[in-house]
Image (cartoon, rainbow, N blue to C red; front, top):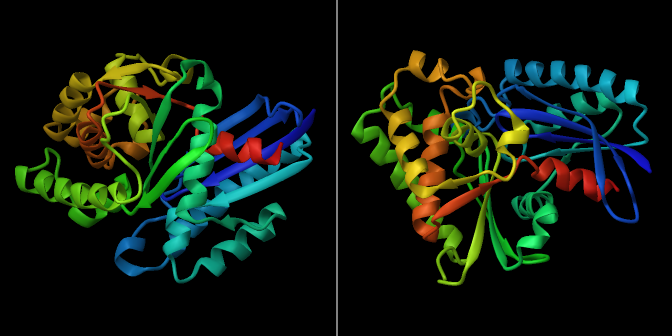
Length: 307
């Protein structure tokens, strides 16, 4: 067994997985898995740069993660950065800061690479279902859409994410019909673009697998969980009608009402409306009766790549 550490730094959060990996099988046994909301992508869509305060929040989390990695004695570390750091003019500042703290250079990967890691992480445990998958990783700055069976058949990353759309349209709480319509317009345009590469609605039977915080939060609400419980959320099946109902509730809720939802992370309160609208629009476009929710995603794909 090899002890590995995988770090996924996205637009909204940075996450760590420390696991024992079997190089022969790719099996991972979790030792530590955690997430910190750092909002690295704060203002990137508007300014094209990573904000100083966003960098410091991220570096603070990296310092915490460095201690955890050291305590567990991980032999290999891989740090992957996604949408916000891809888009930023000053990403070299981010790269050098991470290198100083963790001793490993962050790999600022392409949307296609991100999609492949997400697909691997999400579907490795689902092999018994058979058939094709449509994997949707709804992040803070981008959404990765992948179709495939045992391997990736087609993938596309599009610049719609819960943070990016929230900053762009500034939906109120409750959101107005005009704000919702503007967000939906951006989502539909992005799905039109994705559909040129990834067949979203080709009529063939496929399992829609949803990843990341917007999807897992909607699932937690649907399951009426008294607190966020990854074991209850992992591989839960949430029907389209329930996603539509929850999205409508979130659109009409005040900030305090959203914050009072037991499973709602404080860092997702202001972006969950945009995230749930992306999931809803995708289910409609794909004709999906339900979404299978996975707690295993790009982070696990990174871990397996190290193994």
